[in-house]
Image 1: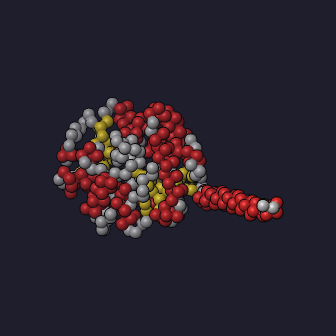
Image 2: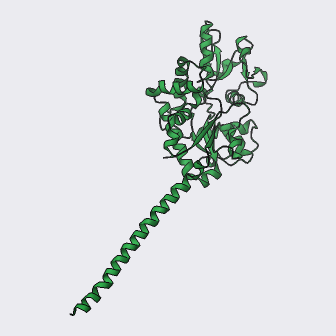
Image 3: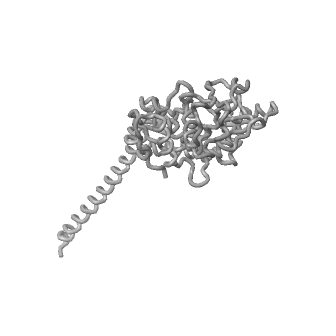
Length: 348
């Protein structure tokens, strides 16, 4: 074979190899920029400004996990720019999410079910409290309560329109208590009637107000007692993490990361070994609370948030269904709500 013909056979092969390498380089470069674009677009919303996270109530032990996720940098570690805003009277996390004033919020099941019944497109991401903290405090050295039937004849504080009214009515229905003949006292945001003895039982959140009031009762020489509806089969779901179905559809990865960040915050804040740090972070938000009181509040919160089995944040579907049935029976909603449609896929 001549030298010329040999070169002619080699050149096409070299061109083919160079072409293949060029195509491979082009493909790798394209993939790099595609990944970069996806990463940037996935976090575009964070760069445009902080994502508002509206709490249900003021800063206290009931939002320990949220405070922890913010103060320890967990949100940032998940690539999230989050601005937490307190709740309280006059604030509505569901409305803020609906009106796009907030990306995420905290609401109780009755709030969610009521909103969905009127057409709100809300989705539940996680259930923070496994046990409702709503209980009634009383002076146990004067009153003996073993069963719901022992409530008859007592003056019971009720927040009309609040979830304690719904819980009490459900309890009365289950145990056949004559609500129309019971001595109920209208509750507002003032504990004075309880101190003055105008009511025997007063609704409180066991892990926050309950701790403070029980300490005051002890100083008066009284033994605090708590009537817990959950012990008698009334499972009315409390604080849960929510967002809109629109945001879940448009930004599924951001919603997933946010949910994981919140649950990581709660898992770490509820770790008994992290108790002192958790209390100090809450005290940073609420300096009026002593560390002694905060430790008791965090311990009480831990009992209601950490399930005996399973993981923090798991949704108790049966409890949600019971809550919906209670609300329908009490005409708090006009038609049944299929709660199975409320839940987003659980974060792994």
